[in-house]
Length: 130
Image 1 (cartoon, rainbow, N blue to C red):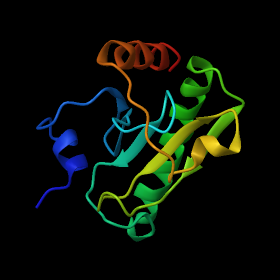
Image 2 (image 1 turned 120 degrees about the horizontal axis):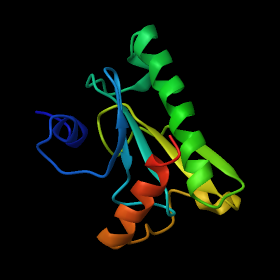
Image 3 (image 1 turned 60 degrees about the horizontal axis):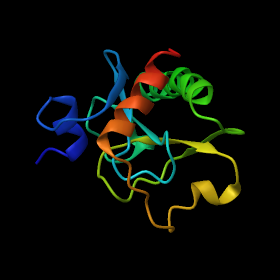
Image 4 (image 1 turned 90 degrees about the horizontal axis):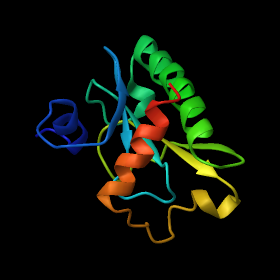
């Protein structure tokens, strides 16, 4: 069965897609910790990020770097935090999280809700900085 991320990649589920290439896709997290929380996902469905082949693993991280620079310009923050948890969706992915304090990357705190209009504004702000 396809993961929710594979369904997003295949266009079966809508997402606020920031960018994609042959290997990866970046989109806003629908259950964000903070505004501008982005997921970077390889297009190949592999559960554990460390099981990716070396080329895909490298491309995933380089793609994350590119997207993080755009997020940092679009969202007021001290820096972009990076997390690989891998428990919630069985498809490798990287979280990019704008940080102003350490607690911004605390995955045990409640997720915030952002209206679709604001999600679209955040999306456009990030995309305009690519």
